[in-house]
Structures are given as structure tokens and as C-alpha cells.
Length: 137
Picture 1 (spheres, rainbow, N blue to C red):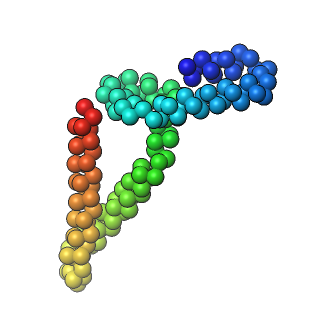
Picture 2 (tube, rainbow, N blue to C red):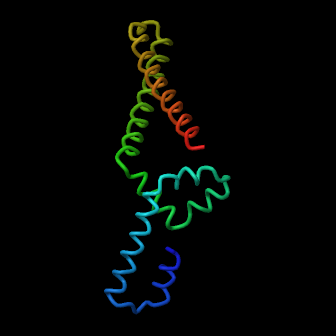
Picture 3 (tube, rainbow, N blue to C red):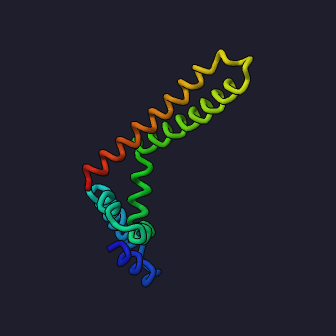
């Protein structure tokens, strides 16, 4: 339907303002209806890799994925991932530095705790992903 609307827009470049507005509203309504489908994205995940790439390049699917990625929950997960990844790198570097330098061994345990906390976050995150994938399959 979306491609039909786009083809109609290209065929008739001399559309009136009201027709252009109506087509734009219908296109937005179509994209919103796809976003509200509960099993739309999980059903895409069940395809093979080639079909996923082909589906993701269509305008409607890319629009739906863009809207889902910009939701507050997804943004907060990406933020937490970046924070814990930075903490993991810092904890690893700090613990290696303390381990290699005998004069600075006092902070070794704190750096190991920082690194382990980040590892624990990522383990819980992967378990959550596995459980959610099992639920939709």
C-alpha cells in the first residue's frame, strides 16, 4: 500500500495541496498501524538472514524500526549499554594496571568489582533477550 501511494505521488507530480496532504496522512496512518502490530517485528526475526535484510530495506519496515528504536525504553537500554561498557573497559584496565604494578595493589579489588558489575549487567541483559526470544518463538 505504501509503495502504491509513493508510486501515485511520482506519477502525478502536479497534485494539489489537499491531495498531497491526504496522501501524506494516509501514509502516516499506514505506518502507525504497522507500528501498533504486536507481532510485526518478532515475525521479521523469524525470517532467514537474507529475507531480514530485504525486508529491512523496504520503506515501511525501516520507518517502523526507526520509530521503535527511538522509543524511550530502547534509548535507555542503549544508554545503559554504553555506560556499562565504559565501566567494563575502565574496570578491566584498572585491575590490570593494579595487578601489574606492585606498588598500587590497594585498588585492585575495587577495579575487579567494577568490571564484575558490568559483566553481571551484560549477563542479565543476554538472559533477558534469550527469554524474550523464547516467548515470541
